[in-house]
Image 1 (cartoon, helix red, strand yellow):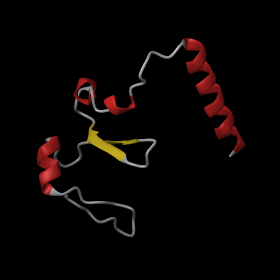
Image 2 (cartoon, rainbow, N blue to C red):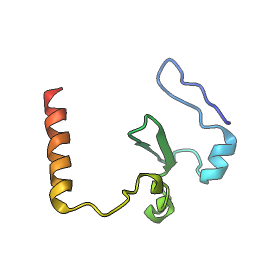
Image 3 (cartoon, rainbow, N blue to C red):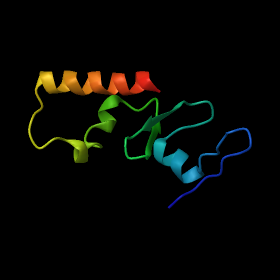
Image 4 (cartoon, helix red, strand yellow):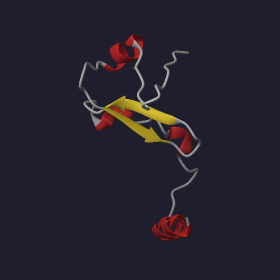
Length: 84
């Protein structure tokens, strides 16, 4: 496990091993993708979208979802957000 520390200004230094792994340098942009289980996916903005392919396979439904079910889920989520 590699860790970093958040400063009082809300900044974090990305450890060298992670910078090398992501192939990022000073002033490169990092993308943070919040996942529903409370974790955050961090990747380089310069990585192609195809680099993310397969990372969320564990969330794939057992069978395809109909458009009606998708619309209902979206509507439900919007209503939930509107109540906040």
